[in-house]
Image 1 (cartoon, rainbow, N blue to C red):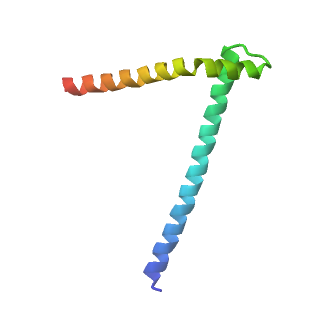
Image 2: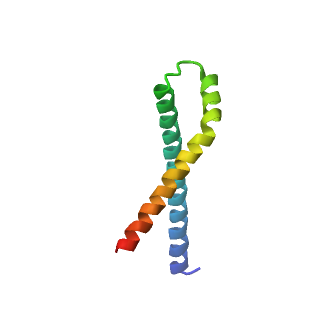
Image 3: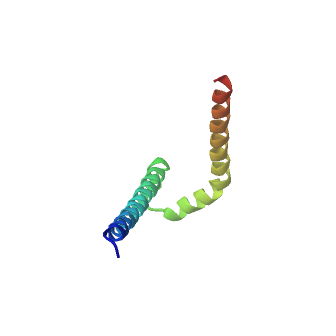
Length: 87
């Protein structure tokens, strides 16, 4: 095998290792974000130790939350379209 081919394969291997490291970092960041969101909910709702009630509340409020989040997405799209029309 030529030196050029070996060099290319080595570079490919290093890139694959970096991709795996970045994927692990992304997973860690997502995990941390989820933990922070959970902490925020527990603090904001003053839950204490009754996690069962939290799950009940989340289940009960899921449809409302999805609607609010959907509305935010729709508003963002509206603002983008509006901005593009003015330029």
